Length: 58
Image (cartoon, rainbow, N blue to C red; front, side, top):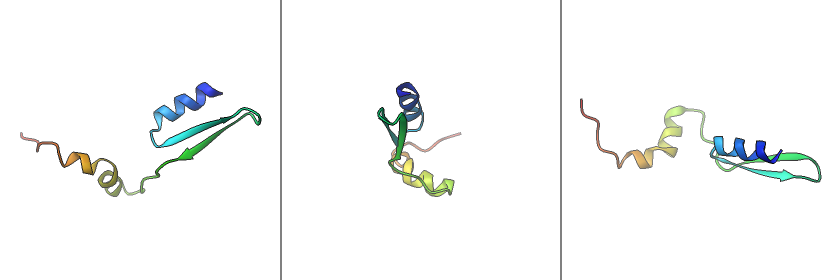
C-alpha cells in the first residue's frame, strides 16, 4: 500500500499521500488544483518560468 501511495504521488506532482495503517487506507491531499482551462493553467504553472526562456527561432 505504501508503494502505491509513493509511486502515485511521484507521478502527480501536486498531491501528498498519507498512509493510514490503522484503517488500511491511502489519503490523497491536493496541494494545488489547476484550472480546467489549459491556457489559464499554463499561465499559472509554467508561465512564470517560460518568460525567462529565449524566444524560438526558425
